[in-house]
Length: 629
Image (cartoon, rainbow, N blue to C red; front, side, top):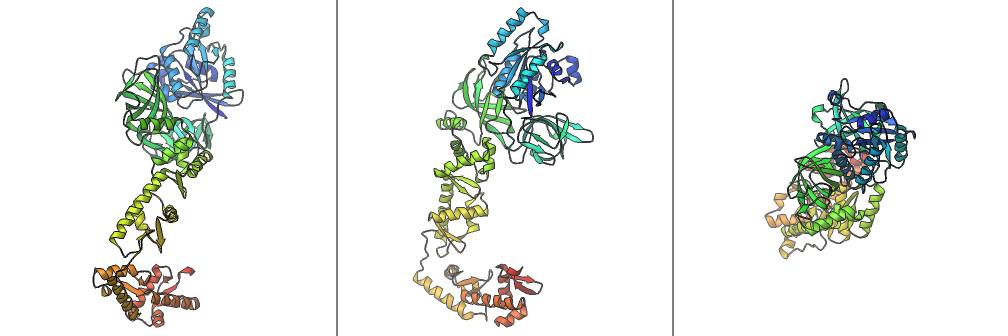
């Protein structure tokens, strides 16, 4: 990994911004109000190069309680944290709250930096270090070294840089194979360039000219230019702090918390299924319908809590929740989140998103809780099986399941192959269908055909397009063909000449119908080409029409909606025309009239049928074989 993102954390006025200036030589407090008050209000960004040639981006986050939401936006996407504690004050309330937030956001790497060490004597400093060791027990920083520094005199800064350098080698790279996703933390306009957004690229990569979407408004945009740490680049990779100049979007249309991502790679939702861990050191608890503040990515949003496995989730407990959001967001399974109480604002818990909720859950439902546990810890094939059960066919592609599970295609395919082997999933073209969904389609098709056969006892079956529309499924034509082929193999249906019927369906004519059939065939056969018959000339009543429909294709050909011809005659004139065109290349209406010895009107009806069936093609007043086109 060529880049890492470092975030600061700690109480107000413990020296975070001054420490960053000592590390980088740059000031991150840029707002006049920040400089005037001497505290960080908004997020600051800068970078420096490590001895191992990696570039470390730094996010300076505010420590003041009023700006915790800005701290949360900055903590999203960091690889390593510098927990800053002033030697002259020790561990303070925001120190603990920041530590909780980092735990909930699954930050795994960090260094404890004891600042302002020149301001206290060794005895006081040792007491502060003992307090720190006690407070970090059981956290990801428990084994971390405490680095003593003084940012003004620069004492200890070189040691800190070396420790950052060493720890950076242990940090895993981000996944660049997933669709790009960037949580926007700032948006502004640059004269001559237009709208610019910044954020950490959480996953994937982006290139100049990429077409992306800003969620949740789903605003389409294009990448004009990209900067990483102030340098123009053609491509930005997962894990990099990135500034992006985008086109066709106004600054006022975007806000912190929006997400830049590949189109259709994220799902918008008003509900989240989550597993939450509550902080130990607060008396806050979560009850049914409590109003909370949810922090996800760089977004803050109000929501209502619905505990699913217990009446109340107390401090220090773990529980399952459904969060009902007051606005929509986009998120993925496995994303981290933090919740704070509505008022007074206090961090009370956090955890992971178990799933994007499709429906409201009943409380204390054992089946719901088991599903939660399976999604959280189960084998990949079990999780994918549950996904396929509850999603429409259009979402059941490899790409969508990669996005859902944050796994590469080979791992997803291997799990799906196991499900296919267990007869739990069926592959239709590039679409995976759970066996329960497949059986529902099968039962629906049987019901449709049963009803059709009862209504039209003398028809061979339904046309493929008609049954596809009645099934109301999202499969494409190719996938419907494969589905039908599977059902044919199972001897559920049969397909004859584009007509679909139940496998056991047979047409049995009664004596009256046999008599009518004989009459129709004789009448049409004797008419020949001298007078092409209309359907209303043949069908005296509904009985005749029903029998004629039975005869269509096997004995009778419909030339158009009104006219019919006996099949033997149709095949003869088709053969004669093909032979004529093979020799003469083209034919006019007059020549065809002489060829078959019929009227101009009859010839026009026949030739237009040949055109529709792609036997011939009309060019001006002549026709050629369609296959020559």
